Image (cartoon, rainbow, N blue to C red; front, side, top):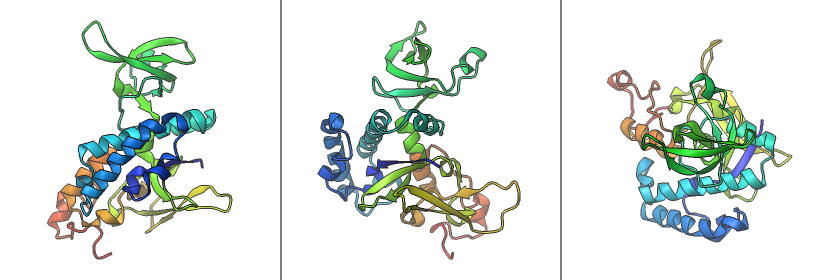
Length: 278
């Protein structure tokens, strides 16, 4: 499995110094990074003690999203090999955020016969332009074809969007919070706490690589889906609505696992603390 390590300002919550986190970015983009990290640190202090989506006001979310995009594209150009990039960009991007001019994108989700042939093509975002119908479309120069196509943002995967969708929090050998992408683990779907049938953990092996370990929590039938929990211990205090809001903010889906279904609540399970009694 491949592992890509990026600074995880989201997990850090402003605990590390701005200088230390800024040093994780290449010198070309540090000037833009520093004020974004200052916004994150200030919002973390102002929202200390809050949980779930309440921890991230729009200003903080926008700063974190931009930091993620900057770091992911920085590594795309300076760290990742082409083969690693292709495998990472094959992961899902649920955010479909607008790229920065010059950023690498991958075409995805086109349905027509002609369009589907472009799925998976790598391109460079050139900006937005109004079509003849007045609708704004992304202008993407397809690298291998040498042509520019007008596409909807929903049909473009970005490195930042892939990272936001698939990263797992971990800690590197220096104790700095990082986000890791795992080629297989990132494809597991979610269920809340003890509704999940697989437990996960990450570690650094003897070669200094981040690896993920998984173990089933119960007997699993052949063909049964394996699920992990995307939430941390801090989210155990959230009720069903708060949990769903948090998952929707971070991953763009409304959870329908056994913990979140109305009939589960009606049976008297302790949803105020997901996983209580475990």
